Image 1: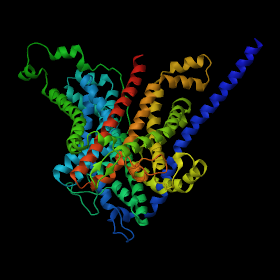
Image 2: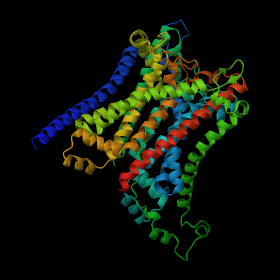
Image 3: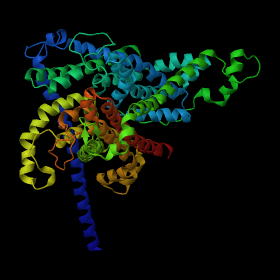
Image 4: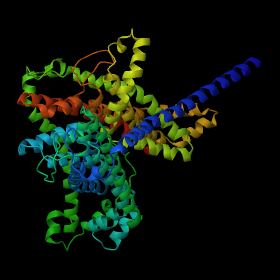
Length: 287
Length: 341
């Protein structure tokens, strides 16, 4: 009896030690995860800030060797590219999401839902290749349109799934109330259900847009890049991400520094997106 | 890439109920439209079909992608056949294309990344869902999600100018001094190479693994934990129980991370060194499928070259689709399990 108690005490002690070690390791993992985040932000801000001035937003890139210059064309290019992507991706995403939540409780809906999830895991460079074969080859030259289409394909799964989730959160009684008032079903869906879920849907759109803003791979051989001012969607167009890629690999220190600044501006654009959407969704549509 | 978990709440849609259907199918007073299409309202009919159209569009998109890549790579498929996958020569000059070295580079860099990211990611997930108090959990979740939101190109930039010099000057000389007789740490420390790629990939897939695993751990019912505490388990023993109940979902989370690592392009291209060779050494440069596409696609001058590159994209597409299908099935089944029970 005495002995058994002894063993129990020993094993209890061991269990407590294991417990403490494992919990510490878990805490350690959380700390280690945050370290790269701090490093990346620190370097992007400290290295990017040196070129961050008004010129960077208002001027065109200068030829090699000349100091200064900006990336006005790339900033506008990025905005146009996500604009095209959004113009295609947002309606497709919202309508598909609406279908999935309102009519999609069947095998077909299940399949689409599943494929949308799978689509979100397809590498963006593969989407770029598809946009190349679908748009660039028939048009015979690189164009912003091809880049925008690639970005749209990348946005669709995010927007679709968020829309569906958010519409599902709208209480069933809202729909019933609408129908009971004699409102047609489609009007109920658009004017009551979608409007109630608007805040969540906007978050999905924001997520899709900000991800598209950070994409490089699908633009490399669709929008290509352009050292000149261009707002023609049927011509190659500059984007911040492709500029970062080119400038980071260039052997000129001046360009490398500008790459950091471009990265900082990119992160700023993404943050501004998130801020704007938050303000809009907060003030106008309260659930 | 954020994967939303499916809500399986079976809300009965009122328009799907028998009563509503009965209303639609009432006898008499039917308009011509109603008689033809079985719907009482043109607006409803158009709206449903419109949304259906877009859902079909998403379905077709996946099929179209596969079809486009297949038709545009027929030239290379016809010439090389299965040799494309097992030959190790990638030579645009003599027009011989074998993808083995780049497939090797892709698989090895992704697996090495998982080797680092899985223990850390699971650790974070456990910390967030089981251990952290509320005030710590929210900002920490936010920070890991921020990590997932940083564009790939920014990781690459950081890799070139911070990670690679650091590896070259400190880590790689240290490893070759102390473990130099192992085949993994031989050769000149360039900085650029497999090690840099694996490290940067591990940072990038970590937030995916941790956030999906966290959601999965949370979906395990609390009664399970309470029961374990009730019989005197320590916290870690409770966590072990939760983990073992969530293993299929966690496996899905890891596979989603793997899928992401395999397809990751920019950051890897910028640090891996870009040479199609198979080497045991982690210091040696390597090449991945995605980075071949990023580097060589615009330089493809001949039809055969372009076709081989598109075939490479097709292979990448098929691999990631298979991985994602398995991963999603695992994650979905996990969610089902508790919702039904």
